Image (tube, rainbow, N blue to C red):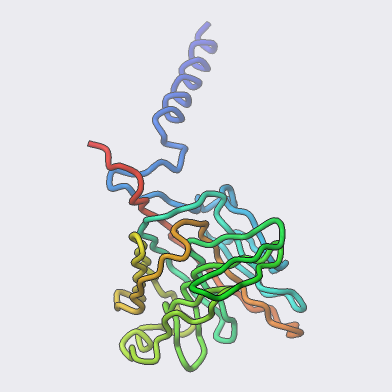
Length: 236
């Protein structure tokens, strides 16, 4: 009898935790949600190339693979207006990036953007990318339009942002999307600031850039990935 009561108490306790959101990714009191639970890739799906993604030390680790295109680990949910914060560390020779408001089509599609015609092959991830660039030009936090128009805002004229990037160390992005406004910050320093309304909503993705025939395995790591959805009314 005592054992039955004990087991029932444990069950009710677990049920209370679950229904209260203790085991969920619900927003905290300030509206922030963790997009990565630190244990597995629930809520994410890979598209594009076949680079490897794994979990290590509460981090998502992307590893390059030769002879494949750009790879993207994408959220299964789309976001429109939000603030995204995350930390990343990248191999000094590996290009990467964070996609925002991005899309992919199951079938080939043609679209007109600002008077120009663009063709999108089936399965090609495209959309705004906040660049991760460890090269000498140091364009990390610049905005590149992946699979579409190319650079929308590089950092040629922003020396402070270029110097803010720390090679082979952890860096932090803050990305703010509100209407047609997209702003980026790297390690607290303002980087890119553009107005563009081509894609108002889409998924977020972590990119491992293609490396051609290079066989050396290069990695990029992400952690503390959290988002505040500005389209969700704040609770009173």
